[in-house]
Amino acid sequence: MSISRRSVMHTTALLAALAAIGSAQAADNWPSRPIRFIVPFSAGGANDLLARSAAEGASRVLGQPIVVENRPGGGGTVGADLVAKSQPDGYTWLISAAGVISNSQIKKRMPFKDTDLLPVVMIGLAPSVIVVPKTAPYQNLRDFVEASKQGEGFNFATAGTGSTPHFVAEMLNVKYGAKLQPVPYKSGSESTTAVLGGQVEGTSEASIIALPHILKDGKFKPLATTWTQRISAYPSLSTAVEQGFADLQIAHWAGLHAPKGTSPATMDKLAAAVDKAMREPATVEKLKALGIEPVGGTRADFIKFTDAERQRLGEIVKAAKMQEQ
Image (cartoon, rainbow, N blue to C red; front, side):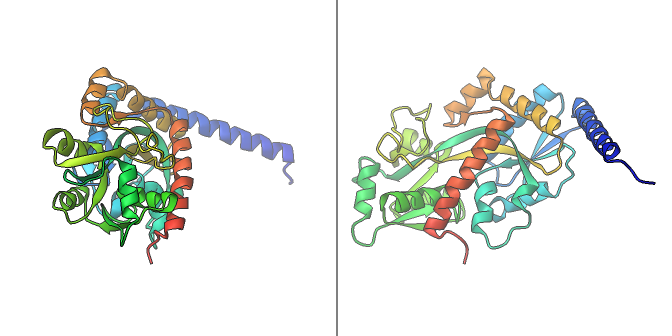
């Protein structure tokens, strides 16, 4: 007995409608138990602090506890792999960073595909600050870049291959002819120590780490912030864009990604909760005082951002040959 084309189309449409209803019902019932935010880095950094602020605020909105778990390793791939292989039921989420975009462009092997993780919402960002020792003669980023072009160039501390400071160095090399040799350290705190000890000429570090050495103990001289806007906690520091480096735009951001297959309705619900949390006056005041800018937004906003970053950073990876050999 043959089945008509119209009958097949009707059945397909019916199944799609039932799936949509099921997804909506699942989102209505979600969350019914505690949620996990997986941070792929150690505690205390910008990614971790943003995760905990988002968890605290979103928990109040959703009416369920949100537990933050630190799973560092592999430049963020250990924690990301855990989430990529989790059940897409809305109870395990990744606190993502730039590595979720750039790692697959740089590393020889990845334990999961980029498409195994879906962008959900931006939480916020810690603008990067290019710093040198307080005794350095440079007054701004232009002075530093021009001086690096002389002789063998400068050593520039990074938190490892593919880290934000690594991208800052290569953006200056590729786009503006600087001569910066990236020197990889295990963490931002180690690279900070290298600058303070005079072992390297400079670095770029998250505002939350750099500002105490600028505003409190005065051991760093800041040259520029590399985000598109000035830092709320330090508005006197100009951006690299303002100093004529239009292509130097990068920050230590944190967002949320979900395992592939997670209900769109559930992702939208979490995105709305995080967005609301990032607009709470007490949260905004707390984060901005640390040098962190809360962002929030919609899932569509974050998808647009990650797509643009993937293309932009990919161009730098290729031009600077940042791929693992």
